[in-house]
Image (tube, rainbow, N blue to C red):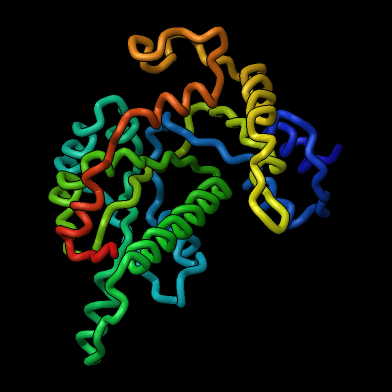
Length: 279
């Protein structure tokens, strides 16, 4: 197998029939994508301003809905603000220790203000306005991560900021129609991290129509394959009091336990309170 096929096999824990690409910029990009790892431990080395500017430029080159550019990035430099954010999530020490911490936000405010400046009504005040800004932000975040990894840096997205959305908004002075999507830790990794085994393409890519008729067998195979690469230790089992100890604790057991706990049910209320119509 070639290098890309090897990386794909590492990603999925199984051989995947992928094309090989000749060495060059395209090959390097594909290698970066297939090699993605989340990093939570960083060296103390600062990230140069010009390097950050390059990452911003790459991030903001992402595609976006109708070129509306509904994204805001807030860099948290004030030590008191960083500490206040880190204190909300003490289980994630890397928020306070990473060289750079950013907040990626959906921004539907700018285009509305521009409409006022140009004398045009904003006629799309419905759920899709929120969704467009959220998707644009996710695309920009992914470009940022890919650019950072290509530059030898590592990232850790922090979705848990939405668990504390009111306080995060207060700390960063977010106005109406601007909402946090995720935080982002950035720095030079101090450890290599590990490759998370993903669901295989055959489970995710459908032809002509959605089909999950083989889900049970496919997920059992995936759970076992993933467990052979990374076994979840008993001390990391979730909600033992509620669900007990199963004979086999794989990815699907872990994740279905995770989502059985209700969280972030105040998000819609926050968005409505800050100007969004979600109808």
